[in-house]
Image (spheres, rainbow, N blue to C red):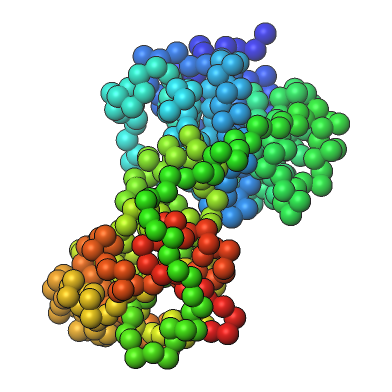
Length: 446
């Protein structure tokens, strides 16, 4: 009979071969001759079995999709039903989402971290218990084997091979998670029916060709219930008159000066939302998390507010940004930023009368070099943008930026002083009931 995890996790290990699983003798070949320790909340009893939750990293914010979140909730419900704890590799794009769900659902967990040899302090047990009074929690800290040459991160391998059970939320064909699943299935030491693979999150472009073979070799195909229902997409509408829709070209070439605020697709928390609130939203209503650009505009129109941020700016003050560039030229200048997996701006937003904004405190940005910026106060930096001396850097001056310190309350903007813009007639109709201003459609002639 294998040693009890409950009894063994609470004492130190001399070597990886002492880890309390029946296949401990093969762990050095899978993980290397690593050192490790377990830190945990001492007054909690650890589960007897552990379920590792892993996922391929298909996109920067892949964990926000409805399918992924539904699969995560299925994995945690399975752990609750069986009395298992969760193993999760830290420093992955999805780890915080998994750990946040464990906290909210009161599922025991262990994080798997790499020892940085920088005098890491042990877990503050009192702090842990304040976070969650009802379950065991802690971490496994691994020390690397200098001879280990595997291209797959150690914490990912440890999650897969230290766990009694494995749940893969998403698997990319030929990816690292796929390779780990292959290894787990081919080893006789790992039991059949201990590897679960979510089928719900496997779209045709990311599905694993080996999946049918895995099922024949003992893996369990898991179908999570998608929480997306028609009623879930319904949203509360502000009381508003249905506004007129006009082609954007009718505004181009006029003498009227408008400053433009473009929106971007949501890729994480809203500007006024904490990380914990964002993960709560993912957990309780994942159907809201599709990276839909118009969702950002709808939120602006519903809240009647442009929220100030400090993204890519110096100084302590948060600001709302506008551009003086005519709308047709601005939309032609947008580029896809591959390192951010998004466009620098989108053909959605609001145009507001420049004179009216100036009365509200909007100011043009001064473009300065780095030497000038060093001599500026925080207040001056709020309305300044550094021009890099590097020839490959973006030409910020071409944006002709204006800024407003703090949020802009759109309830003060008169009907005659603004236009909302979207790229299609269908989207214009979809926001007619939300907008307080006319809606311009960016047709192909612009």
